[in-house]
Length: 287
Image (cartoon, rainbow, N blue to C red; front, side):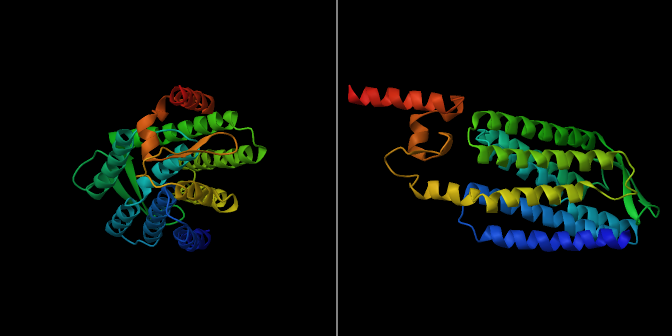
């Protein structure tokens, strides 16, 4: 079993590197940037956990965990940001900065866990289970982070449902269903790990890998990156005319900076409201 789990680590790292190479080949876009950060975070998580699986002392295991946590807190955050952007959910920049700051604080707490008990309340090197590994008590910030993980999953599921309702295209609805599978996979991995029946193996790791592969499949098979990049290439953000790009379902997929100064897109609940506002502006110019 240990050899099988080690094989998962090596295969996972190879898959991540190949996917990262493919994403780098895409034209720059917001979605591409999120995917690059997601894959880099997942790569650090996998490499760190590989080191932990081969550690022989508590100090080696702790250093491996710290390497993993250079990326681990950001994996779910990147998935959340991608799902939100794909589902056309506007997240204020201040809110995103707060989320980044919180996840960065998790990394810093793990890097300094030997000097405080906010995240880990005690560390223990266990030789039992599938392999020798590090176990820990749960500090208050750890419990808060676990609650946030569940919150992320719930929010992403709600986003997908909302997006599914507004779509009329069967193909795009199938895309939403596939993306919804990500939350199911991550929830199964999380619950399985929390039950303590995995003999020390972190099942959230393969769950994250499967979720990332589902995202990558949606990107490459459905040309999501190419579609959004094409929309951005149609305009320069600094031009004097406002540009709004809608997809075949009349859903907003892009607007340049000039359009952003003309309309407050955060207040529109759907494409009908946008069309109504555009018609009003056109009537004002005609008069």
